[in-house]
Length: 399
Image 1 (cartoon, rainbow, N blue to C red):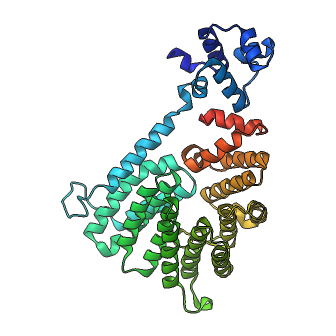
Image 2 (image 1 turned 135 degrees about the horizontal axis):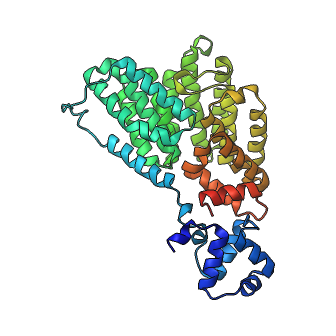
Image 3 (image 1 turned 60 degrees about the vertical axis):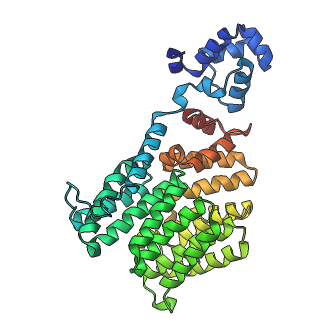
């Protein structure tokens, strides 16, 4: 059925109905529908806007539902993403530069490398994950070369390159590889208190994503207390941002472990620091401020199964003026947590609408992040899921 893979869903239904020697009336009877309904589906007059109906048709036709969606249900970008992750894996597995072996390419000047790192962070914050996948392998190589030539000048860009890599790999579901990148960042940062603290933010994310919540909490707290000023009133915004971001990571790890008391206390400490930092800053690429702490409260409540609290925090956070200032990546991640909260609260309609907002805010979040696709799959199974989210699921091959 190579040519049939390009057909609309309705034509595929007709194709497989013919293969099974079923008339339109026979298919209609087995589905509990009318012959006219089947005819309209096959001619494309009536859309199949419920995944449950697709599964029913597939069951009658004795095929997998994915067959009705065709091979286009496994889009090219999914393969490209996997290939991109392998290129990043290869870049992290290359030890020639770190071992001092000569390379033909010259080291990149520090100012140019700093611009490349800045571009990488902006690409991540705009949730342009496919583009970042392409940027990272050469960025890692350039950062390693510059560091090998001049460790003092090159250390900062190398740590930042590893941080970006870890952040992206967490997004695309490669937790163990993210842990490697974050560990490299911490190792490269050793000796610089601020750089270590910044690297541990991504280490906490990677450890949580790989199911090591206790280790994530321990590492984040150790780094937070090391960077914390003796008197918060005397702390610089940079120090407070790093310390607060680490407290947020520790709180999320505590919530993942089911420790509500610790999560609440740590978020309270982070909120106090956020009030001192204020809104609209991005010190050390943390984006730390009152609104991001509010967003973290949603994520923690979801982890703890406190759906109503999560929904309340979500509505409160998105009413802030600073919500619109957050990068697309952060807003999309928050909305994804909100969709999970609505699901926990048995409100699939609101979860579906929130996922549509995720797709509008950052399409790559739904297309490239397994966590988002998992939530989408849960929403679309509900018989009352909105048609818009069903269409999104069908377009992405999520059933």
